Amino acid sequence: MYTLLNNSEASKFDLYLPGELVASLHCTITADEIMFVYCEAIEPLDSERHCRELMRLALEDSLNRRIPITVSCPIARKHIDNDPVIGAHMQTLPKNVGHKHENSVE
Image (cartoon, rainbow, N blue to C red; front, top):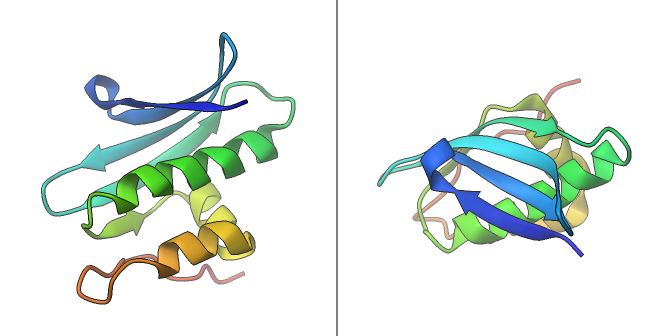
């Protein structure tokens, strides 16, 4: 079972499996915007699954703030573009909040 820690002192979200840090999403959070800067898998086994779960949980946490989310990390963008659950999370942003993410071009 995954646990997400909003590590605001280090400006990142950390994803844990019991007793083990498996992935981090570095971000900047201001009163006007949340920017997902880069995602790193600490644990190489199942890194795709860890990053996907990290994005899902970080988006859930971020959507509660009701401010725009900018995604500059290519790994994060890939998961938003390719995962229907994560993509649906991004679509739940109210129109007056919006987001600056655009589908990546491949």
